[in-house]
Length: 290
Image (cartoon, rainbow, N blue to C red; front, top):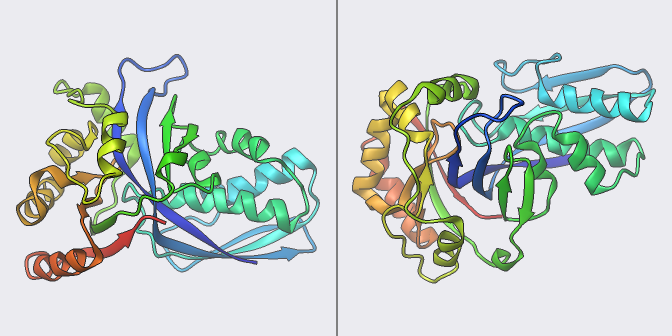
């Protein structure tokens, strides 16, 4: 069984203070699924072993791997006595704020549900996925856009945006950013900003052709923390803003990936060529909604 695990962007991310009683934050986020993906191959094993083989040597292969945890969770929950070889071809940069690990884990849940013949409902898989990570539930839904609330794990697919397709120039510095680190810094950060607009206003703007974004529509209040901690993210965003426009550039998740919203593939190709002359040490991707 060969599957695709797609990345995500956060077009809006408001992390709320104070923390919840469970030590997590409530948040409001607008997820977008994009066509950058990891390839995952699953093969049954006669024994109960879970084996992870990944093209990226920085990805752990044991219990710290979210795919391993997803497979083990299904084994334990459903009493599965067979195992699986999981081969991951990484394309989504690790530690970039693009949800690669969470997407891989969700793909494992969906894939093993079929491969092992478990017949678990989507709602049951969603319930289980929250034990793995807050971003995992989004990737279980076949939806290009969704609203995430609570810890980000309460997902509302946005059916009225099924036909919206956005083009992006996505730039990822060669720097791993730890999400727990950024949240710890966020908890001590005094410069907390509030969004000028809400998700409903943003989604209305995104549905228009061409997309015209006002200042403050795209929002991520983790961005100030990451930009302070990693100055290269700050410099990269400034370059994208100068090229694409101030209102159309944002960092995804806890970073360091930065993206711009473009009007077409042609425009994305043009800006990618221009940016290539300025940015030598970052990975660049042309991506769209999928």
